[in-house]
Image 1 (cartoon, rainbow, N blue to C red):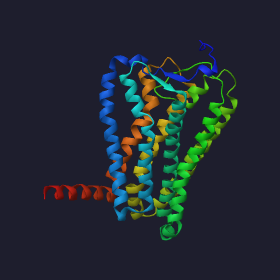
Image 2: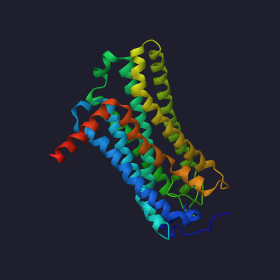
Image 3: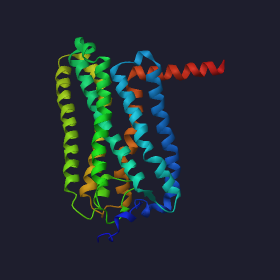
Image 4: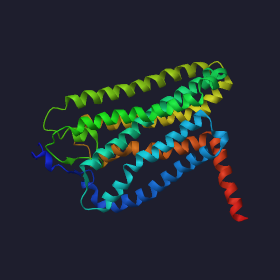
Length: 315
């Protein structure tokens, strides 16, 4: 059944219908979210502060880990405060401008995550396959260029997608998700969305290219590992956390993109909600633990920072 035709000037707010079937448990979800979100923020802030404050961690790999944690704070800020408000509210609405901002923040966060993981794969490739050239290749300028690439590319992609979406004439205002999503808004259009689809697929294939680059770098790393026990140990310590993080992000985004475009409404609402939230739930909380616990240098600095402050307090 098609949504009723509306005058485009009247579509000033969108209704988010993702919580409609789970309202009886909303206070439980609110309590869990109220515990999870501050914990996620704390874990990421601890890693960020540790890396920034300790000069021994001012190396490219740790700078990229720091960037990953900063991006997690940025992306989740576009979802969790609004989500928690909706859990306590009877009306789940969001303004048109608020919806566009939320789309921009959430999806630029997801793309920035992939870009950061890509430059981390490049960094590990140089460190393991070209150790003698590492510091001449990964200069401060190169690291800055990588960071700018991680942020500017997603921002440009999402800016173009937002402009293409904003020009659409809409015939409805109900979004069947917990948050605003680019394809969900495009489906409300009264007319053709071919241009949006084409550019959307260009972005998808561009970031699929990121995955190909990561795959190629790890093929070289694995070949190198087969020749040296020392390199194998370095690979296990610094690359396995990266691979685990990459796997989690890729699977979460894969499900979200596929379901947004081709998913069936016969899937239970709870399952749809989890699939939509997965890339906002799992990577932001797991990344600080993955890198903080597996990378010995970060773990030691976090413990040193924590216990040093504890000693000072007791004194």
